[in-house]
Image (cartoon, rainbow, N blue to C red; front, side):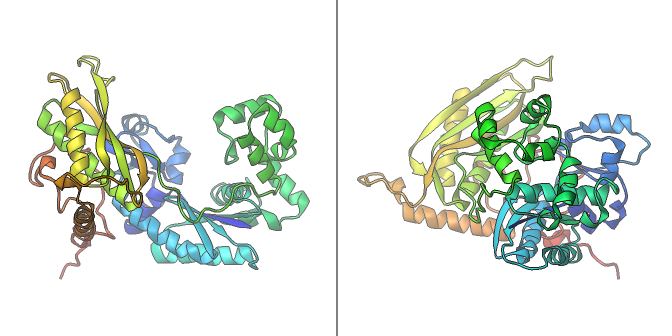
Length: 433
């Protein structure tokens, strides 16, 4: 038996937890450089604002709707996510953190699951101010579906029975009630059926989840794939996707950004590539890996028709797999020097760490180079990470990233970002005497 705990409109909910004035208002959280909507409140959804809707269109189409736009504050969202998942862990003994706002839990053998779900939900709401929906089912796919029912019944009264709002346990429903819920749910809501598969299923007359649950798995496998077959079996109550308490290590790690302003000079690109490599190296060490290659790229904006267009990237192999930020930066800048061309307004750059391997793997070789002191390098990177984790990212940085006081036009536009309330002492509100 599985439960899925999912924060409602998570980014917006995190903002509302510290700004109650945003309640009952149409709110959107914008992507990097304040480009488009990546999270919407229910009020914003009711206006017709879509995911990915450009902000300039929202501003022009709903000038009198009072839409409030905020820049993404990922530092705040990440910390609130950790707090929510820690509280949600009380739902069951084993937890898989699936995304920043979702986690699966094993609740097998537990009693009164709906009551337990309501207790955990109220605890999350009271302790950190984030509302959530909880879905319970015999498989992860059914738990995901139950979560959709719980949220829809709460947000759209009448779409499902009222007693399924906020916490929904599909396994506890009588067969006739379960069939009614599945029949009322579009096939496109099934976790694992993407837009293309959903369209093909509708063409075949499979329009709702009840139809999909009654499909023959062998036929599904022959016509579509083993992945679709697995989803159908999960809808029939046969667990095919196990809980994974430990997240699998990433095979590639990328850090890319669109610039707040186009960059034409090499110094600006050097700073940006250094910053991106530093962030990627931190992620690399956090999962206990090393990289054998690094890919660096730059390109202009295809939307700036009057600008000369340029796009180029290159892969730089490392002498040996490394997680040392200095070595990764040196390799990335070698690649940047190869692909840099003056006279172009670069709109985006990035790095990607490739051929990752476990840091515990060591290749036996003669230690002929003084730079191969792995033990000292590991201690240095550990100290660097500890200081930046305690005092804030960028407290210690490599010189090629520039100083904290330099104006760096390549940095993202975040004109509407709220303070990092939970991770920065200086951001705490001050009471007036």
